[in-house]
Length: 354
Image (cartoon, rainbow, N blue to C red):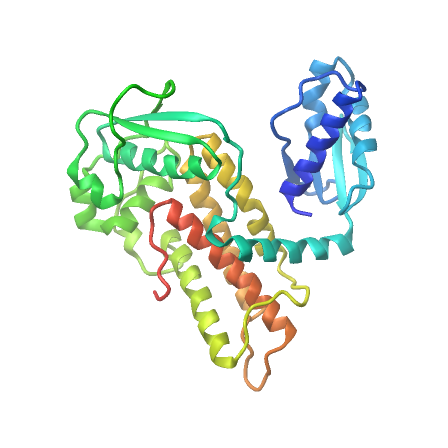
């Protein structure tokens, strides 16, 4: 069971309790589920009962107990406890967790670069407006792409005449006219340099990463460090992780096997980052924060290299390809699909050879 699955299960329990008139409170649009912090109980925790206690005019622990009764026994959940002032603590069913890992990898591979696309903003009509400034333009263009993955209809406009150099960064302004919705101003801290200068110094990929990776309220570092070909440069790390996955796929083909999840794989950190990707993408859309997507890609890349070193997807020495290798390759290819999809949304290339 992934965090997204667990979130939907809890939300369904809230709806049941409200429909049965056991709980009188508005049903939230979503329920946040987080990994249990050190010293906590179970695998995941949820504070929705504390959120509903006020509107329901009932103690949070009482609300939590109502929800616990409606979540207990759900597929993939082994145990549900009420802890502290009213937290729900979930312990997953170990055997179900194995099936969930397999289902996760298969889902990512099946959906490819569209993994994580959802309906969080389905039906929303958004109009983003930005200043005539390169960081604002790139951020707005990227937010349009991210919001569309969640079902929103989006149009952008510029407060002035677009800079011709923006097109070289993949920025295209929609036709002007009557806005379809109230304007949402996108105003990150300005870059301090024009598009032409940044393209000359850094090229399009490094420029876009440098503009998008910091939070909008932070200054964007746009120095030569973005061009360093080493693990200390997050952009290089993310793109190199993708190219390494492509190299593994090519190597496996030469050895006569493909990635198929046939055997359980010990890759908790990497699988967790893959499972968390849809939530990170949805959060980037909701909060108008492409930096959240960039940070998630960094986490995937770091987890991939740790997995790659601990569990090599290709046979070594006299080893023969086994079910374990096929499964490891499948996990690696799932990571590659997420990295490729995320980089595409940021407008950054994902080379197969780097």
